[in-house]
Image (tube, rainbow, N blue to C red; front, side, top):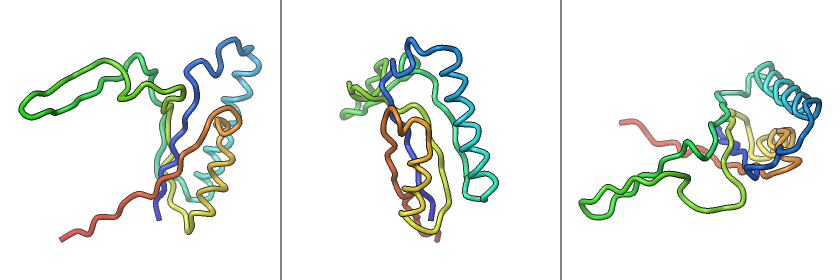
Length: 118
């Protein structure tokens, strides 16, 4: 089954971090990514650009409303994702716990809805 592992952190989570700390975090991400590539569990994954690049579209009647920014004001924002194919929710939870941002933010796990073809 496919699960989306959504990575949420505060926008300033790494503000003030040293170059070494940022380097360590990036190394941890590369290691985690390589682990799930090697295990065959990775489907895809990407970091997202900052919330300052977000645009939200809302349709109200015949009006299309386009606003700058994410859809809601929150303390934590979606920063990236991994899409994994694993045998169980428990395995998805194990992988989520290995994502470096789990130490400073939160990882939301969502099963991908399978829509029958035909």
